[in-house]
Structure formats: C-alpha cells, structure tokens
Amino acid sequence: MQLLDGKKAAQTIRDELKLDVAQLAIEGKKVPHLVAILVGNNPASETYVSAKVKACEEVGFKSTLVRIEKDEDERTLLDQISDFNNDPDVDGILVQLPLPKQISPENVINAIDPSKDVDGFHPESIGRMVQGHPTFIPATPYGIMLMLEHYKIETKGMHAIVVGRSNIVGRPISILLNNNNSPGNCTVTVCHSQTKNMKEICLQGDLIVAAMGRPGFITKDMVKDGAVVIDVGITRVEDATRKTGFRLRGDVDFENVADKCSWITPVPGGVGPMTIAALLKNTYRSCLMKN
Ligand code: NAP
Image: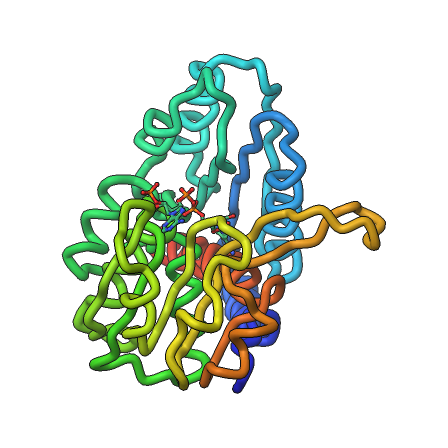
C-alpha cells in the first residue's frame, strides 16, 4: 500500500505557485487576490477559512477575509458580493458554506461573477466542466484530480465508484473521472443513500471515492484487492484523549482497509490540503486571465 499524501502534494503545488507569483511581481504585474466571506462563526468553517487565508499568505497572494454576522440578511451578503464583482483588484470570491438558513446558498452562488468563481460552484462553471471546457473546477474534486496527477495514477479504463452525489463533491468528481482526459476516462458508477447492493458495487471499484460524511462506512469487505481509495469524508468524532475533545475521521475504515489498497488517502492529510491547493490554482488562473 502507498499513501496518497495530500500534504506533500499540496506543498509541491504551493511551492510552484510561490515561484509563479514571484515572477508576476518581478514583471510588475498584479498578484492574485482572493476574497473569503465568512458568515457567522461555525467552528469548522472558521478553521477552513483561516487555512485558506494562511495558504494565500504562504504563496504570496493578497487575501481579504470579510466577516458577516450570522443574523445578517441575504441582501447584505449579495451587496458585498456585488462590490467585489466590480472591484478589478479582486480575482476570486469564495463564500464559505454552509450558510445560515435565512440565506439561500443558490442565490449567493449565482451572484458571484463567473470570472471570479474560484470555488467553481456557479452554474456556468459547472456547465463548462460538464462539457469538458476549461473553467474553474470545484476545489475538492479538482484537488482529487491534482492528487491523481501528482502520483501519476493511470485511471484510464478504471471502473470508478463514487459514493455521494453532492454538487460540491460527488457529482463533479463523477463527471471529471468520466471525462475524456488524463486523469479521467473511467467508467463511473455513482452511489447514494438509496443505492442497493452498495457492497457488491464497491467491490467492482478499481477506484473508490468516498464522499458521504459517514465515518468509517467503507469497510474492508467492500474494497477489492489493489483498489485506489480516495477518502473525502471529514467528520469530527468525539475523542476524550485530544485537547480539542474531537478528532477527524474519514468515510473509510482506514486501519482495516489500507492493507488491501494499492493507494489510499489518509484523513486528515489527504484530500483536505489538496482542496486548498486547488482553490489557489483557480485563483491564480483567474488572475492570469485578467493580467
Ligand atoms: P452531503 O452534501 O451531505 O452529501 C453526502 C452524499 O452522501 C449524498 O449524496 C448522500 O446521498 C450520500 N450518502 C449519505 N449516506 C449514505 C449512505 N449510507 N450510503 C450511500 N450514500 C450515502 O456531503 P458533501 O458536502 O458531499 O460532503 C461529504 C463529506 O466530505 C463530508 O464528510 C464533508 O465534510 C467532506 N468534505 C471534505 C472536503 C475536503 O476538503 N476534504 C470538502 C468537502 C466535503 P443522498 O444524495 O441520497 O442524500
């Protein structure tokens, strides 16, 4: 078994971006600027946003963190987005999800200028991705593709099983793996909560992407020998031995599954860091398009 080490792969991407950004500065060009908007103070969202801001600093991007009170109405957020859409200095706008219930995520996503949609959730970005055209790809699926590329995993002809069909992970990764690209060119089966015979389907997988949010769901008896396993799940589970009182657990029963795999991602340290690296790449791309 070999580890798909997201920390290492993401570091390589950040190192490359750092050089690219330094070059922009040498040429007197604008450096990428990411705006992150956080509504409320959900602890997991706080962690994700601060990791994104820190990553921007590391590679030399400009970043702006905007905080909005959790009781604010949708209009306030839409007005902020509109200001950033019109600001030529801003290359990427991300609104950290989930949002408080008085705000429609759909309205918010649709309000972001597609040319600054570095999270890749706008219908225009998704449509272009489905058609196989260049666009901003949602960060987590893009991070998975970058990881497969980094470790030179040949996916052509594989039967990929994607467990989960959310708009931010399951559905887009199923499309990317199916596209006529490298990585890609898989035959893809997508499973969800109503799927029957999950075990039999997963056992057919040369590649399994688990994106459910059900800790330890994918067990040893569901994975065939030599499979590549990508664990997207991140759930906080109680752990009294930790100072925080919790630890992060993936959707795969890593301890028992790992030995059967050719490659497997750890949690944490797998898909998580790649997601942030992918966001940085999208922001850099956006900046180049405007420079
Ligand atoms: P989500 O929107 O809740 O979607 C979960 C998907 O899993 C749904 O399609 C659901 O099916 C399916 N599912 C749930 N229980 C199932 C079961 N028992 N059997 C088969 N399918 C089942 O979640 P998400 O936003 O995609 O996130 C999934 C996980 O990835 C979460 O743990 C999240 O924290 C993590 N995540 C990690 C990153 C990262 O950077 N590493 C980024 C994003 C998300 P239905 O459609 O039928 O309900």
